[in-house]
Figure 1 (cartoon, rainbow, N blue to C red):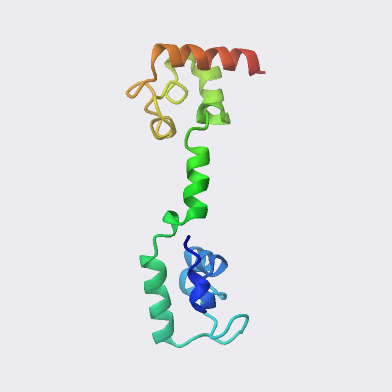
Figure 2: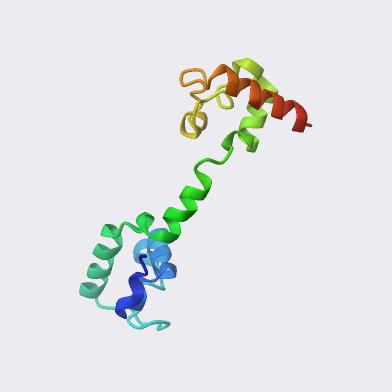
Length: 131
């Protein structure tokens, strides 16, 4: 588990990390001198916090790893961009025919193509569930 705020440093909790990721130096949450305060921490303190955020491999935490494991085998090709690709381009599609989600997102379905059996299974699903 990666509950980084267990050491008493409140700014290591997820809402503050997200504030840093989205707003960097303009963030109001992670830059506060005390939790909920309007006053900014010193530059030295902020530098240390920023180094922590840059080095923390948050995606390895149980929460995020478990979410990833739960969705990695999801049928990504059932999402809208792939359905539209099948509807518009059929067997010339560049997304729905991809062997994996990354290739599909990049439109490389003709280069990294799914097996013929997988293509048939997907096409059958699109036909049965399409508009």
